[in-house]
Image (cartoon, rainbow, N blue to C red; front, side):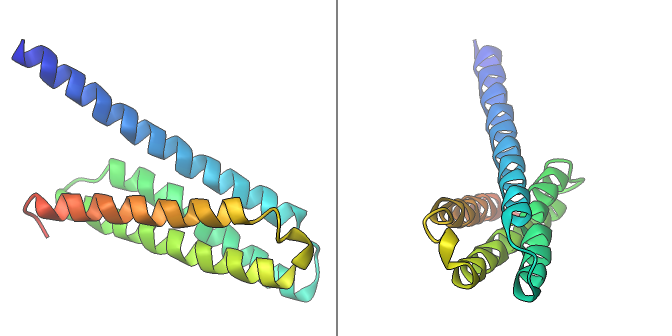
Length: 133
């Protein structure tokens, strides 16, 4: 019975990892679609580059964390993913400012970047509370 409970717990953990892996990948895809939809003016060229770098880095660093070789490495990678999510929030705000016609379309993306930041912060907090810094 104990083994069945542990297997169920491990399955749930893997499912949650997969869900966040997919969520961060979808976030990156949405960022790419946003960048492709922006006009190619001087301001947007810079904003596109920055938001694509930070927005796609969230998922890449999360995946790296899932393959970490130590708890310390895991926490480090999750912190980087969190930092990139927070940076993406900033760039989405700047894109909103530069493209008033998109103001109604960007709140969901802005909210997702904030939620990912909170989720990743909670993962770091949880990992640190289990003993390794």
